[in-house]
Length: 452
Image 1: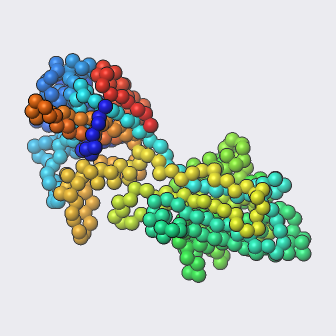
Image 2: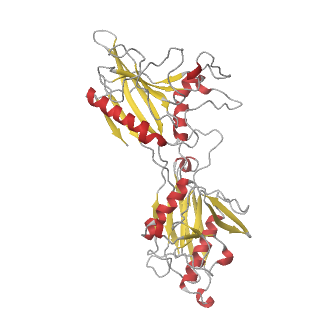
Image 3: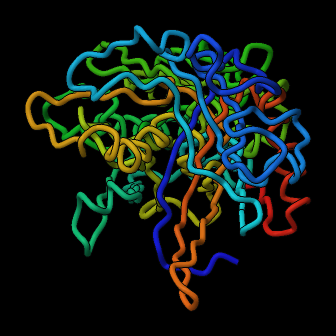
């Protein structure tokens, strides 16, 4: 085992799309003096003289042996690899980087590899009510205050508000005399759902539709017709389900329709919540999102409120990786205990997102590469290893090097190699690395590989 409180020193190598294979012959530096890797291509080289392979030679094949080289390093080609002699850079970069490398990984000593497969982020989604006639539908009462409270949680929500109380939103309405208006049960539910969704949305950060209300809360209310009958809305499922880029007419305020453009995470979270609530497959789902318009309150048959938590807004220079908002929704007044109030999708930051990895790199290895980033004005954006909005599988290789300083004492150097592979290469380069690590760790009998 690796027993130490020392913080491991990180080093990063990152593959780019299209580089599906690692070289299995030749040397890191070729006969022309250039690097034998294309831009964004990964390789594994012998990093010691203790093996049959010459120093800096690429490992011979994807199934290694300890006899070849018990000590290896993982390397990555850069845009300067093919032209080492003529490569130039501009200030403030310190010099042309011809290739990237991790520290030497000695498989004769403890090595632990953790593979973190990409996991998509998700939003918190709360479903309130059901179709008219169902036991968990919204109850209807005349001349009654209906209120719901949304408490926001998450790193930013809790850091930027009081330590004693999280930020929250209360939305409330007072129902009319439904009996005197001769409303049907379905119309009563439509009125309550529409008016409450309206009150949430005029306080939502998504629209900023009015100066009278704060418009700062990270939540949006979608009004849903669960039957899909007699309405013109946007189908959540069916033959053409919502997806990234879908534009949803969501909120009508003073005659102006305000839209929400869905991200992939938001669309997936809404679909998952709707499928869980309805109990049918996505292809059979009849739910439609209808614009919230108080002019139509009580005239249609919308029956469900779907609350979706929004991501926090990033600042121009933002070092906080967490952006998701969770929420706790309470039906505080008017509603009976039978009304469905279920969280059917949970806030999840995901893992393997380019922004997360870039922030980690910027806080560790980039601090050493780029003069600790002590620039004030203007803000300098140094190069990073990750494609904007990219998704990655990440191999964390925790290893160490021990050196005897005298007969009684050993100095331990802990290191961490971080190898990032685009998810588009999971079946090619990723599969190769899986096999390579599994084989090498099995030969060494001195470590383990864990899949997360």
